Amino acid sequence: MSNVKLTINGTQVEVPAGSTILQAAEKAGVRIPTLCHHPDQDIKGVCRVCVVEVEKSRTLQAACAFPVAEGMVVRTNTPAVREARKVIVELMLSRHPQDCLGCARNMKCELQALAQELGIRDVRFSRREKDLPRDTSTPSLVRDPSKCIVCRRCVYTCSEVQGVGALFPAYRGHEAVVVPAYDNPMIDVVCSLCGQCVHACPVGAITEHDDTEEVWEALADPEKHVVVQTAPAIRATLGEEAGLPAGTLVTGKMVAALRRLGFDRVFDTDFTADLTIMEEGSELIHRLTTGGTLPLLTSCSPGWIKFIEHFFPELLPNVSTCKSPQQMFGALAKTYYAEKFGIDPAKVFVVSIMPCTAKKFEAARPEMNSSGYRDVDVVLTSRELGRMFRQAGIDFDRLEEEEFDKPLGLSTGAAAIFGATGGVMEAALRTAYELVTKKELENLDFVEVRGMKAIKEATIDLDGTKLNVAVAHGLANAKELMERISRGEGDYHFVEIMACPGGCIGGGGQPIRTTNAVREQRIDAIYREDRRMPIRKSHENPAIKQIYEDFLGEPLGEKSHHLLHTHYTPRKRV
Image (tube, rainbow, N blue to C red; front, top):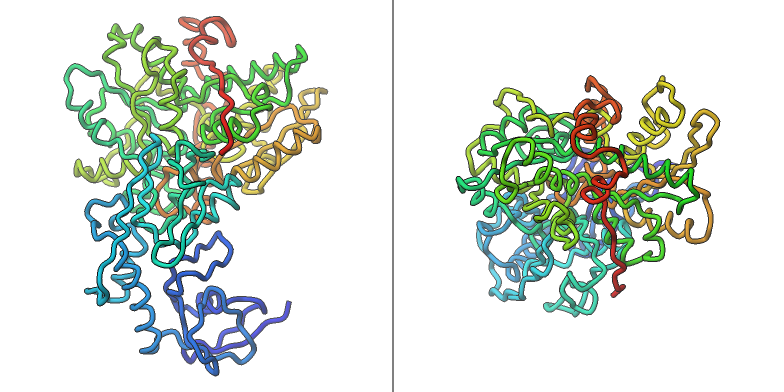
């Protein structure tokens, strides 16, 4: 492809033909403000915040959509450009609620930041707020259409990245807004509650359901024994809430900070990730040897589970009956842990720190009470936990590292990689190989299932037994893979699906802003965590061996089946 030379603010720059003015400006070191533009999405060009002057053009042009041409002369900072941008943003603000202090996106709002950048101190237009009702129908997400600026970033994410199509632009002119299908509450449509729309939204029109106050109340209640579990991905992302660079591992500091919040025990969901490998790996071997339903589909991603319940209910028999590690932990905290330490299970209050908004929905499922109580009481996203740390005045980065409490805090590198796409598959293969072959695995790194490729396939040789596996992340990729399976293609034995792009490191509850570049940095951190762990195979975790010996009996046994396994429900497709 040939290159094109153009001039931006007096500086000549050379870029590939077909580039936009915005891309050329980035190469020239010139920042052009944007709002509807997103680095991981197609061009929309609807907000016009990025307008620039192009010599010989009669009108201002949107830099995100306008292609470069040989000899083009562009000016990005003229009085006309600055005034146009201010007018555009002021018009948005005239329709936008002025409740920044009460908004979850305060100080992380792109519209707020843009107004600050453009020097807007007053809005010259009469106020005409939308004043639309908030949708609080789900335990995961809250939709506030009054704050919607109709940038359509959430629409693109829901339709193109996730393949769900639960959100659509509706109405026209001043009444334009993004709504679920038929303007229904979100709980009544096909929404998987993955929360990727939260990452796409530049403002506070879609946020997680905030459950921090319930946790504060539990921590202040002397009658409650409050324990916390932290998902594998959190250790690679939580530092961003404290201003640390993406990909910073904060495992020990996170443990210390949680103790300072007042939790009675700080445990690790990685423990039950190892347990999941034992149960799910045994389930795979059982299906392979008894002619069971194949391929076995993983079940630890609740957004994926809700998706398959809506879109592919005929494939539910393929889904592993294992609960997610979060739910396994809750069941064991209120049975095994309570019994081992002589605590009344009715007083055990389980808090999960998760990368995922769909985990809130999962914890509220009526079947998740095999302990005799609700297995997990409250789920917080990493963003919610970050807010709690700031409210408590915890200087996260200055804390000395501490270790998880035992026994539900002992885990392996195999559990840590659950946080990245392909991690569950790789962890399972490490254990399945040794259980099937009775030989020690020389190379623990199954690089074939790693990385951000949409769908990854591999054939693993288990000492003569060929195991065909596939991995997909992002629900649009999952849909493509499920359609292959429905057509009888692929001949897979084992399939891992993660609802969110990149896996849990890119979950809907992770720090803002989550882009593909940030996902790559977080994935690198997850594999660094794996490499530094003294034990890297789930079946070698001594605490896992102990819990089977003392309490569960054996994988897929009667007690394991009761506490650690579940069922799923076909749902209507609206």
